[in-house]
Amino acid sequence: MSRPRLTDRILAARVQRTLQGRERQRRTVTRRDGVRYEVDGRWLTNFSGNDYLGLAQHFAVVDALQSAAGRDGAGSGASHLVCGHHAAHEALEKEIADWLGAPRALLFGSGYLANLAVLQGLLGEDDVCVQDRLNHASLIDAARLSGCKLRRYPHNDAEGALRQLRTVPDGAAIVATDGVFSMDGDVAPLRELSLVAKVQHALLYVDDAHGIGVVGAEGRGCAVDAGLAPGDVLQLATLGKALGGYGACVVGSEDIIGHLAETARPYIYTTALPPAQAAATLAAVKLARRDHWRREKLQNLIGHFRQNAQFRGLQLLPSTTPIQPLMCGEEKRALALTTALEAQGFWVPAIRPPTVPDGKARLRITLSSLHTQAEVDALVDALSWARDAVEMGYGNAGASGAAVA
Image 1 (tube, one colour):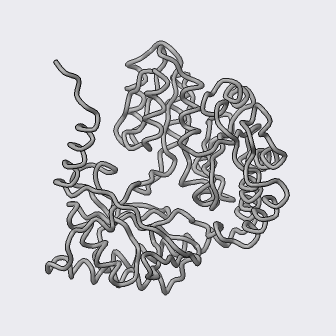
Image 2: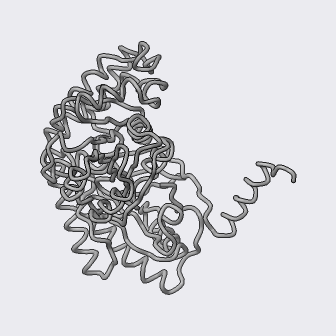
């Protein structure tokens, strides 16, 4: 039997995606001004990004980036454990640990790397990781990389998590969950999951990528909002969403963070973040802690959007976060809605399989404190028009609105 050629397999996969209408196509942003993006020579109002607090272009954040780059250069030059750990990294880790009320924090180049590091660094083949069925792909990949037993429970079902833990009574255990689920916008039942973890002597690990900066007092995230103490949870804080920058930080006890710093391969064997990026994120964290009005405005916009959308009969998933999914069902309908919205000046990409299950394509609408109420009202008007127009046969399901989330 001859070995299959990898190029033939790749070609077959591409043909299959084409036949299914699931090609993904990148859109190139040439300029950006807050929530206004220039794409293919046209300015669109963006309702798809994760800059929830509007900090990515804040003058204080940009000034910190430019000043640090002028002083320290464009890159760190090495991994943290060689000679790449800069004073800016140290200051950012201490600020985030203080903000989230934990003993120590550890910087990573991305949330994906951080999740790989945590599960690979803490679990082995005799252990188990119990995860929500809708967890981010990086948590699933991380468990597989660690070699541990991976068990998944129904979405937001703490009793399901308990049942899965009981199927593997031996070895160390981690219960891992998103804080805010990136495609549905709902929040994990962390209080109940924490109790399950305690009863089963497991560690609760929360990927709070979409909660940090937005949820809870001072934007301290889902774990704090659920009333969990720092000792109850190991937490991931992504720096590239509400904080507007890039990278991630794992926050927890001195023992766990120290162990990860010495054993986690995605930390040991990768170049540290540029010091200038750390300086910019430090400025963003200080703004997020101080400017409570950003979260207050964001929550007001969320409530206003939901009220108006529901009045127009738009089918939203239940969510109190900036992620407001509009369910479309079939992929062709989601793509046609995206096309109709873009014709009216709004950028809201369709999210479709395999990112979400078959038959659950959606528009993933996200709000930012940079949006105005008038822009939100205009979006609701555009959504209502697009829905009616698509029902009457408007638009072709092209690939321009495809998502890669």
